[in-house]
Image 1 (spheres, helix red, strand yellow):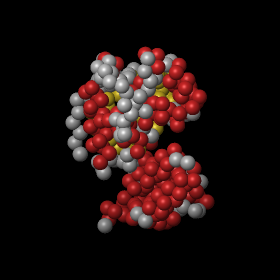
Image 2 (image 1 turned 90 degrees about the vertical axis):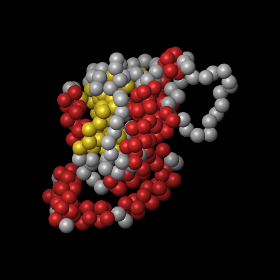
Image 3 (image 1 turned 135 degrees about the horizontal axis):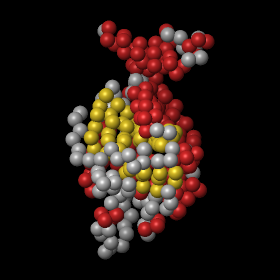
Image 4 (image 1 turned 180 degrees about the vertical axis):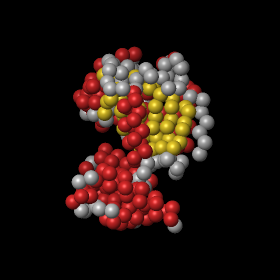
Length: 286
């Protein structure tokens, strides 16, 4: 599927879609960038060719600065606040990257603030740079609150107390702290190391069956349910994966090339890649 957006350029390779955000001068989430993100996430959610989406920035200092405050100042305030019965477009956008049936990864080489941080925290994984990556939820300091999922996503990522510190403190949180708190999966010394690791991870995930990626992600997200309900959903989703052709092929191939042997079990990470390659080779022969 071709993607055509003003502030997002894309490159597709081997099941991985790289989406590069560029909205000078500092990647503020202006209306054009916001509309592009809404449109892009809606499109990619339905693109069956994509197994992994990697969000990155053309600006080395900013992933997404924050939502456009000038735009927020135009929001209507002449009537009392009314509780909506459905999610806003912003919430739906964040929910899409959180729940779409493909992995969503953020390369956060620079800053992410406000709505940009809310978008990033809704994705599946985030990776950053020592001394460079910074997050900030500055909304409370300017009189509002993180209204684009921050008060809901951050407690699930880092815990209630740390989410309170991020949101109420409205201060910069550095990469080292973000990694310790579990907001960032890993941090790297150089951008080259960051790119190498994330790209390799994305291509690795893209080798697996699309059905198992999608259903595993759904099951992990169910950890937000009460544990018994989550376990029941997990068992049901496991049964669904079991009935896919890909699962039957890959499990049989794993047994053929050394799973459950001492040698195979001692190198399971490599064996997983060999299973994928062997299945693809069998498909080419057919």
